[in-house]
Length: 80
Ligand SMILES: [Zn+2]
Image (cartoon, rainbow, N blue to C red; front, side):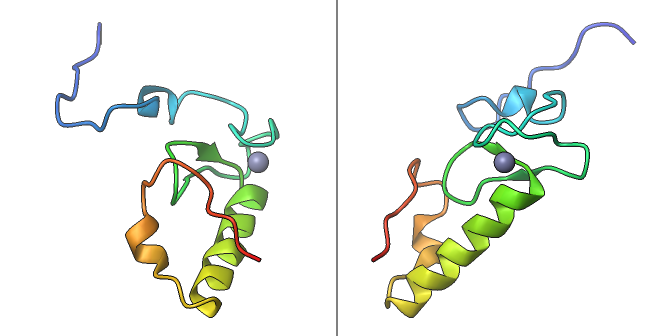
């Protein structure tokens, strides 16, 4: 194999490194145990940070906010 095909439908961002990078965008931790795309941003997350996002989404819902609408919003919402 040589070269790689550009996916013109890919969202703008750093998704091109999602499968190749070796450290979490948020905490810098290893991705050896898995990687997940952030719900809110284009960050590639380790399982720890993914777990924190799940908690954040649960808090948003508990606060009456619709976390589904915040998918890909580009920032981490703050919840009291
Ligand atoms: Zn992390």
